[in-house]
Length: 268
Image 1 (tube, rainbow, N blue to C red):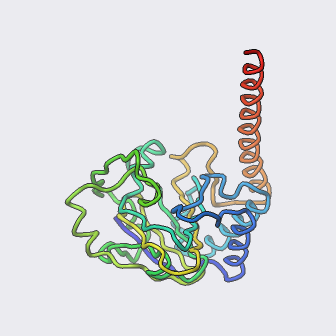
Image 2 (cartoon, rainbow, N blue to C red):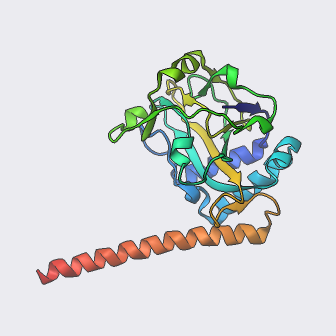
Image 3 (cartoon, rainbow, N blue to C red):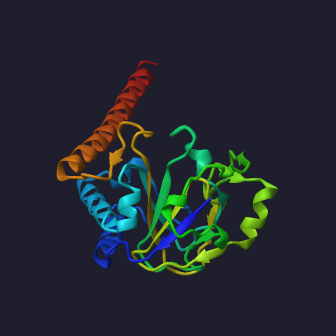
């Protein structure tokens, strides 16, 4: 288990552009959802693809991130928008959600970006101080502990819409020692697959704007993952084209199903 906070990874201008993109695409609507997210479709538009390319460019301008991520690829990205009435996120590790993505040893890590100043009143991430590390090379090391998680079927919005929650007394001490990690616009919190984490609920009037990119070693991920090195205009276009094709295919299938059902009803 390991996490590290890095300051000023994204520029103020790019952070503001991302907030504007979120607002224009309607991802900040809703009263109680923990997040509005759509997996790899988080940047499903051409504009989104351009923003993603700029994000990766700025991330890779940091020497430690560039060195650590040189053989990595983007697996998925989520916009994490908490409304002013958003609930706290329960304690969990990400590894149980990702067991079908890669075999052990795990390589997936999360880069959690703050697009505004975020504190304990605006959905700050809760992390145990004892797990803070100086080097990203300490992420996903051998011997990391996967705690027992219960699979919930009716967690609902009050629990943050999570299907796996930590139910392990061995984790209690870490959870009790956790503190909110205060971040400013453009800061990043990086953490590995095994890191226990949660987040505070919302008690203010404003929404929380953040997003995360999950990356893993490119030799372990699906073929449609996006390498972070040599991320050119052409690779961006190819990436966005694949995503748009998936969206269009899904819509065509849904339309075909609708027409088929309509014809069946008319016959009856």
